[in-house]
Length: 318
Image (cartoon, rainbow, N blue to C red; front, side, top):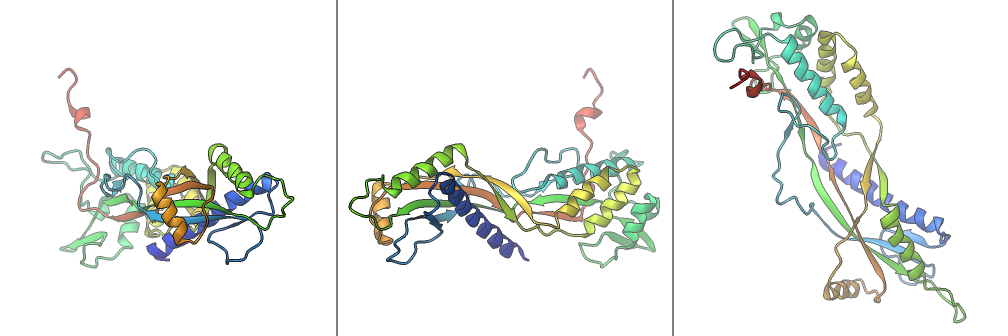
């Protein structure tokens, strides 16, 4: 599944989850006969219903002001904290890869960068597990090669692990009630009042939902490298992280929060209802906003992506 097919599948699941959220609330309130649709049913429908109509889609409100950039997950200045749409397992792997490079990779012995990890160490100087992994790679002579063969000597390239953000998508919904057939002696409150009061309360008291999403694709070569790092570090931390990575082969559940939607002006609302050929009636505005389609990028680095902290190198007292 490519990135665009993945985004389409996730957003379809989001829409179904929003419908399920409204349906569960109405059933809890004893309005189980009021059906929930994602689009307007054909004319002549006699049953009362709620339509969650997605009338506007676009990027997040802050997307224009936020520059797009990949987030480095390795090095002393790696991104810390959570990232929308990124499973924590990738940040943890970045920390362990950084530790391995600092402790197990050969260091520069001369020049101003002495003591830093060598950007192109000889494979023979690496721990055996890492040397075996590099030797299993092929020098294609292209920029994506993990090793470089020069004069019969093989040199390794340090890894780079980054998170490539996905698309920020915001969907604005308009909840509209369709009244069923009512008798002249029916003195109950209109269905619009009953249903909308339940959904309005739900937006305040129970607006978190979980969306089932397919597992995101990632470069499987990272598993072999991680296993080699685990052997080099000599403990079970990498193996523990990899168990979480194996769980990502199954569908995941992503929590999202329903947000109050932007209310339309009177003229915009009237124009929308006229375009839908619907009478004016109570409505509820809501929205969902999420980042979807992000993925990790595991590639050879151009040079060492691990820098010593300049402050830590300064003598105390200066």
